[in-house]
Image 1 (cartoon, rainbow over the protein chains, first blue to last red):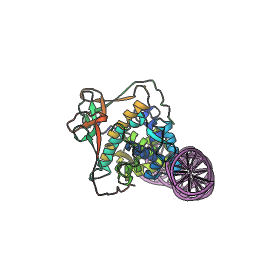
Image 2: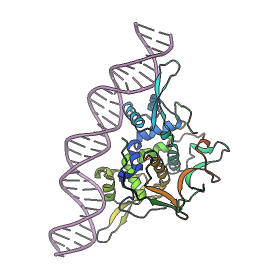
Image 3: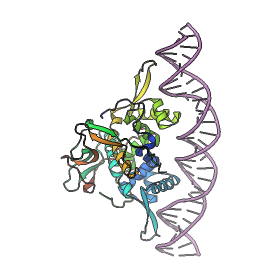
Image 4: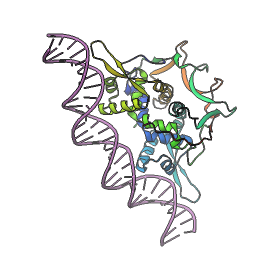
Length: 164
Length: 164
DNA sequence: AGACTGAGTCCATATTTGATACTTAGGTAT
DNA sequence: ATACCTAAGTATCAAATATGGACTCAGTCT
């Protein structure tokens, strides 16, 4: 699977592709940056605003969409000396993005951060050993990328309802 | 690392974050869809156009950006009975996106494709066993997500030059 | 009561998108 | 050699989105 053969069409039609469907609600720069911050633990409107530099209108819109698509949920909180407010926390669905985002981070550290020491490393809490994202088979062995193959199911087409 | 503590700021400033930088050139719906098709083996302008339904002007723009950022390269090709043309192939850098994209696909099959049988599975070519994307440590053992920790380097800030 | 603050909304302008039509260049058939 | 065909683009322009600044709102603190 290292490099796929030339094709005129993808084997999965775009209207049946959950990956393509997910790009509808998280496939834009601002949503991705919000999710990045959220995965680091940021939760509040103004914190997203100042950290990301996103226009307030766009932030309000994106948070609404992220909540609507189930990635984030509003929660009440109350800081001393101020009135109760809402914060935006990742749901289990949103939290599950950590693996793909960390895979993406390894990619960007390697290919965008050209030789610079990555600012963050992942380690095993228990013994401090370095951690990476990789393909593994069902016996827990690492699979080299060129031993990969794709199997396509014969299925009655059920279009993905574009979660929007 | 299961759920990170609440923070007012991300530990990595956005201007030093290679992940955030990469969202500049691939963090939009169309670029992501083009890359999805490209990872399946699609290479030609008109094939992208008809498969994705992207407006021709936007396609031209996105291909230009993807080439400029090093993810794709133009190559000559010649089909029988027609004149030489250009096609857009993934570079090594673009090909390396397969892992993060497949991680993302597993996520979307699980969370967007709610219980439906995923249209594609990854298997080991050699023995057909099922393959997934996971965290592994340097001894090749799978790491459960809650045994993960992040280590931040003390580094002199070198802003990521926004590859644009 | 009045100032403060986080969390938004409103509005005018600038940019991007999307749909359709047009252009280009070499190969092929006549 | 001429006319036609096709993939790969450009041009144009109305409609949709994004941007940035000002404005609103509702509890808290003084």
